[in-house]
Length: 291
Ligand SMILES: [Zn+2]
Image 1 (cartoon, rainbow, N blue to C red):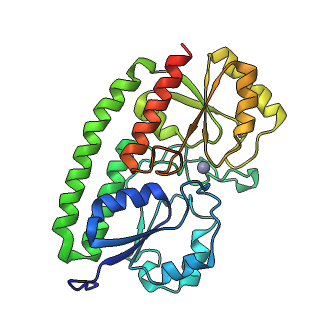
Image 2 (cartoon, protein in one colour):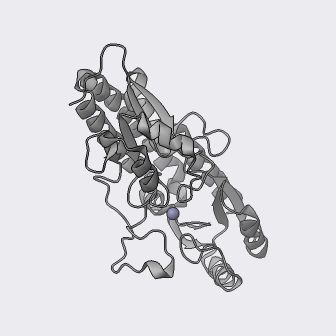
């Protein structure tokens, strides 16, 4: 068990801005928080700076998504940070995928096909129900690592979940008229969000997660978009918007810039709840404009 004095705050490192935002809600003023990936960066391919090693070396805890989201860059950094508190299985190493029902877990693992979602879809955080699970996981980990402040973490968890639940009712209302609508995404980041709100997000500009679009694949997507009357294409800020715009021209669709990460696009800097507010609002506007 680690001991933190009156002055000492837990040094927490989060891999991505969504997890950091939830950690901030739970940790409040009891923690100091560093986020590694920029909210405008592809979480699969983060530029692993040497400064990250120093940050991890000084950390009491690391919070990652897990499910192989950060597999391309985090393990090597953790290795080089030589921090026993953060080794896999240690109380200081938190995997937010714990307790989440993973979608799209492949029956057989074949990395040769280039699919970077080899452990199931790792973009589970962009779903309010999973946001609650993540908050619970983080709160339990904070309480375990810093028992003196366990009550504060529990209270913050309660407040956050109440706020999220209240907004979820509104988000469900906003998207209810669009149940069953087909939405196209550049990258397959949205199955949890789609399930939560009854949307169909099953067409992707990438032929496989992490594999750039090809002309033959795009032709297929365009044909399916026409048959399914899919008129909305969502694109993360770090992906190629031009491809989406080309497809949109062919199909009369609207390109909607989105982010999975607070701060990834304008109007989402306020954190996880504001991010979902923005996402739900921009989708509803796009649906309304494409009746
Ligand atoms: Zn992905």
